[in-house]
Amino acid sequence: MNDVIKEEKRLYREARKEYAIVYILALFIIVGGFYLTEPFSFASMIPSAVLMLWAAGIARRGSKEKNYLLSIEPEMERLKHSGLTEHEAMKQLGCDSFYYKPFWAVI
Image (cartoon, rainbow, N blue to C red):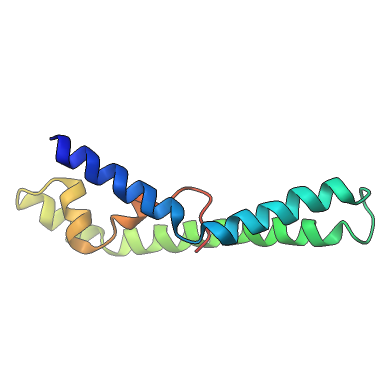
């Protein structure tokens, strides 16, 4: 049981570290850009654009994951009826990474 918890924590850490530099850079552009520019100025369009692209990326990723999960639902049901738990079935189908990725991940 303790090994399972350690493995879960390791997978969460790896998922958060993946592309962390990209997200930190985008966050600096957004926060720094709004801090250094006047509201509604031409220069404030850069952090606004980064923020909108990030939001669109999150929405796109969520939509793609939803469509994929809906497409494998019959296979999931078959695996669950064969005696596997839902989490084990997701691992077997290779979509457990959706579970570990943070909500703000775009990639």
